[in-house]
Image (cartoon, rainbow, N blue to C red; front, side):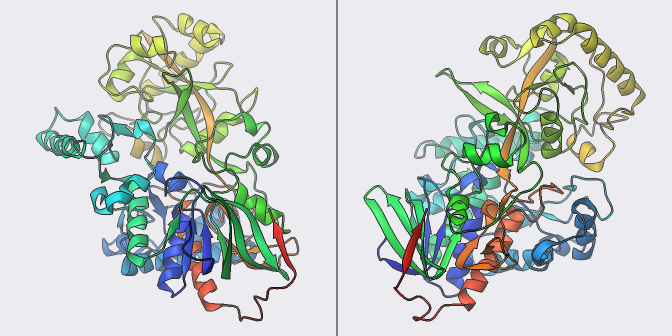
Length: 575
C-alpha cells in the first residue's frame, strides 16, 4: 500500500517509458509514485532487445560515426511523409540524445553504441550505424531482493535453464568449437551461470531488455522512488477539467491517490484488449497472438478516452513480429519471435497458403509480418518457413538450435513438419505439391545465380547483416535441394501498438479539439507512435518512449499547479 495519499506526479505503468518518466521527474525535484499492475517491472520492454533508436546519440559520435539528426530527419520524412502533426517528430529528434544523456548523468541507466545496426528501409537518409544504442549488461545481484521484480525474458531467449544470451553470445555458442575465443567466452558464461543457480532462480547476468529494466529499477531504488506493485488503475480522477489523481485496485482493496502535478499514463498501449485489437488492428486482428506483457489490458487508453481523449489511429494499428508456436507440456503453446536468427540465412524461404513466396524473407520482422498478414485468407492464417535439414543443422530454426541433427522430437511435438520429398512436405502443409515444387525450383535457380530478382533477398545492408557473411556470393541465398525437407508454421503477432492517444510535444493528452486535458500525460505505447505505423529502424518504440518520458517529466516539473487550481470541488471519476 502507498505510504501516503498525495504525490506530485503519479506514473501508471513500470515499462521503460514509465520508469524513465518517474526517474526524470524525481531528478527534477518532484515527489513521484510509480504504479504497476503486475508483480514485475519492465512490461514488454523486458522481452525486447533493449535497443533504442536515438539519432545524434553521443555514444556513437564518440566512436566517430558519421551521422546526424539532419540525416535522420531526411530519412523519417522519406518513409513517413513530411507532415509532422503537432511537431512530435521534431520534438523527438530534438530531445532523444538529451534524454539519454540526462539518464547517463543522473542514473545507473547506461547505453553503448550498437555499432553496425542498419535502418530497416532503403531510403534517402538511411544509416547503417550510429542511430542504435543498446543497454549495457547489468549484474542483477546488485538489485538484492528486487532482482525478483525484473520480469524474466521470454523462455526461449535463455539457455541452460535460465542463462540470458545476447546476439554476441549466440554467435559464440554456435562457434564454440571453431575458435578458442568463442570457447573461452562460453566457458565464462556457463561458469557464472552455474554459480548463480546456487542462490538464484535464474542467471543474474542480464542483457538486452532485462539489462535496461534492471538499470531503471536500480536507479529508482537510488532515487527513492517507490513502486507500488499489483495496483491496477481503475479510473482517473478529474476536478473542473483537470486530472488530479487515480483510483487503483490493490490486493488490500481500492485506493484513491492525489497527483498535484498530474498523472502519466504508461500502461503499454492497446495491449491485449480484444475490443481495441478488433477496432484498430487489421481485419480480425483479435485472433492474432500477442507478445505484449500479459498484464497489459489497455486501461491507460481506455481511461483517457472516457475523459474525451482523442485516439490517433494509424494504418495497421500495431507493430508486428513473426512467431512460431512452441508446444508446452500443459497442451498449450508459447510464442517464439523470429527476429534475425533464421529468416535471413541462406537456404530458407517463406511460402503462403498457396505455396508461393510472398516477400523478402530477410526484411525486418515488422515488414515481414506485415506482408504475412496481408496474405489470403488474411490475418490469423499461418505461412511456413521452408528449408532442408542441412539448413536446420547449420543455422537452427525457431527454437531448434544449430547443430541439431535429429528432428524427431520436434516433429512429435507438432512444432516442425518434415518429409523426405517436397511432395510429402506439401501434403503435410496442406498446399498444392506442384506449386511448392515450382516455388522451390524457381528459388534454387535464383540462389545459384546469387541474385533474388523476385523479392530481393540479400539486396540491403540489413539483409546481409543478418545473413551468413561466410557464405557467398549472396549471404542470404542458397538452394534448398536435399531431403529431408522441413516446414515451420509462423503467424503474425503484435509486439506493441502504434495507434494510441493523441499527444502534443510535451506528452500532454489531447481531446478531439486537439486541446490538452490538463494534468494528463501519456508516454510509451499509450501515446500514439511518432512513427505513425511505420517501422524505420531498431528501437523505434523504446527510443520515443524514453524521450517523451523525459519531456513529460520536464513539463510536469515546470508547471506545478497552484492550490486554487487543484481545488476540491466538483470532482468526477472516469474509468
